[in-house]
Length: 426
Ligand code: DSN
Image 1 (cartoon, rainbow, N blue to C red):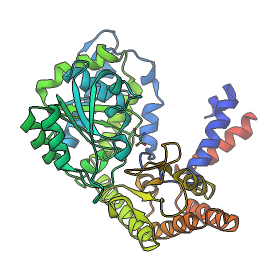
Image 2 (image 1 turned 180 degrees about the vertical axis):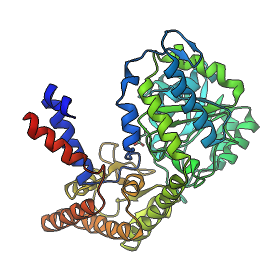
Image 3 (image 1 turned 90 degrees about the horizontal axis):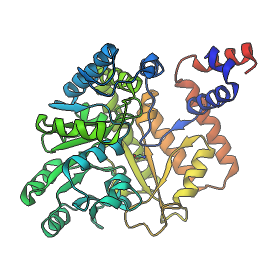
């Protein structure tokens, strides 16, 4: 980072502050993770200098031989990881992966049946503030009031009534296993296509810790940076028969030149995900979440759906005289980063909420296990019980700093940045 610190001290200072923040606090936002140094090296490389519109072997620019190599590696590794036939690794994000599928399968005005954002769905599944809600006719299913799990009878009833062209399974704040076979059977009954957005659980699926949607969905979309632990980006999987249509919807349909440095780092992340360590990591994510859920429950907190099967818990604070926004704030003060989140049938607006979503992928990457999760769950419970106790906040903050030192992240990167600051005055 010597060059950056000399050329642009302001950006360098922000970068150094961010590595201090990431290494010095516990990251428990369920959709975040820490990539390896190898993934970062591929992303911060000369691959970013190249235009490569098109696909391997069919580019609109010369000089793409090395671009073809990395994109082919990314595609073949991804297909091996998920046992899929076709993959497109060019989507810049999960939303763009979803957009390309909608544009492949639907015409504007067609009906999509998807999970309500307020019950754990995603903006790009038809929220009125997203392109998806503006262009398509959206019908939402949700969770049942009693179990707070997906109401498959409601999905079937709505599908029979509204005859959607596309049914979407997948969520961004749902702590339970999703029954993709049930979605397939409902889709087949009404003649709909079935798309799964597995962004949150892709790593768990790759490691066999959550059933795979691949045999049950016509299209599977995902991001690469959540449980899958790659760079920020997206991808699409499907049967080969849809491949040509999806390729042309990504480019030239909705994107221009692919971000080849990101595709190279996706290839590295997919290689890492094919390794045995990755399976052990995902199993630990699930175990850590279970311990966190048990600790919070035994300390008197109610979890939406009563627990978790995956990488996240959703804590209902409505009986605790505390909003999600307040809980996010007190945890951040103590060095634990989470996000406020609506719970099903929430009476608070999305800017306030009655819940917090807490995930374990990032702390598990850091090496935390059962013992630490029990301790951290205890601290979260203490803080949410006495959110205005400044002494408690400061005590917990001190302990979180100790845990962060005990489980370091990114080796001596911070020390190297500090040396750059000194040598360049940056
Ligand atoms: N924003 C992501 C999340 O936090 O779940 C979903 O795209």
